[in-house]
Image (cartoon, rainbow, N blue to C red; front, top):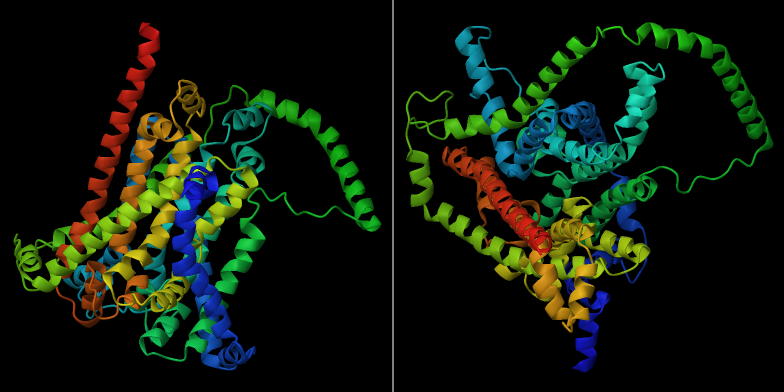
Length: 592
């Protein structure tokens, strides 16, 4: 008992509960899944050969990579200038713009996918509008094709590209751009030579995050795409539901996982791009490099006088590009926010229709679809199940995630990086692979198709969100406060409860909310591990969307769309209260 108590006080002992859940539900099953793919104990690559020998499988695999790459490229092309404009905006406007990006990020992905079905469908908003205007005589085929898949995927992933870029760009010293301009550099030159290289960590992390998540997309391609737009995750999910050979399922999963791991290994370990570079060892390469450097120095000397004259000429000249660039920036921000927010507003407005079908704008106002939701036991029963599971996941993930984050803050940096990467694995690899491994883990535990099993499955990803948010809060925590408390004979636990916990409470509450949101929105893993015994609200919505477009889904999607506003209010209230308390604490020494 004493040994366990001592272990619980060590940093590794604090991390152990989170690692134990990860190991039992995901770690051991993923190893078992790999052995299944090799037909253990008779090790062979038969399952991989069978996959690669099927032209249809190769086509689906290449199609998965192609769709993911194009969606990622679109997100980067739109997200980079958007993030740049947000960072360059005044402080108050910047906060508003970030909130407008965060709201879609927190909104249910299934609800956002449904909104595009409503907009792009044959009787959807766009076709109805064009038919009324008289521009078309029959509905346009703008859904169930590749373009619709890109529209839906980019809508879901764009905030995930913008937010990492904003985080990196806000840390760039703006005086460097001003220094470049003062030395005669044009705005474009200063941007490409100074700002863009410094923003590359955000570009790399955002691109990797979006691409790897896109590899595991299942719901959006299945809902918006046609038969020729299936991705490998859809293929794997159909194999699981059909009780196909588990060796084939494992091989398909590990082929998808191998792509993600290869990319993370090449680009994810060093975002600065300096680690792992080998020095030039070829003499010819050194000679060419030396000649190029000498030529560059010569050209710089010849251009010095020209730069000096140009800087003097332009020093007091009004910029002709500023007005139009500002207009273009405003237009871009308006279009991006319209793209992110308008589909959700459409669903909210259409949910109040008084007709037996969805129309925009509604001809009359009615709450019939909300009453349908509240009077149908299958709907409100699924919602209550989701709430129960979400609360359980939030409590469990917040407890073990906070302990893990606190333990990680007390270990050396190299070990902290390794352990953090392990804890974040379920949210950094394709979700379909996590679902298959979790399916196998719950089979081992005898919890497949149970509510407890679903809670454990959701907790895997929720722990990662809690660890990230609480760790960010602890990064700004002054450890000297703990040491001061212990110097006054406070025990470590007392110092944590009385000093540390109140100061990191906003991070803990934020982590708990994100854990709940993650669980409440989860549908891919749930569809694999719930069986027919557990029906959550997202699972009920997905089944309804696939089989019948019931307008009740619009009411449910509206409620899920409004939830992020509630989360943001709670987070803001928590932050404001914490800020007021910190000001009071700071004022006590000043008063003394």
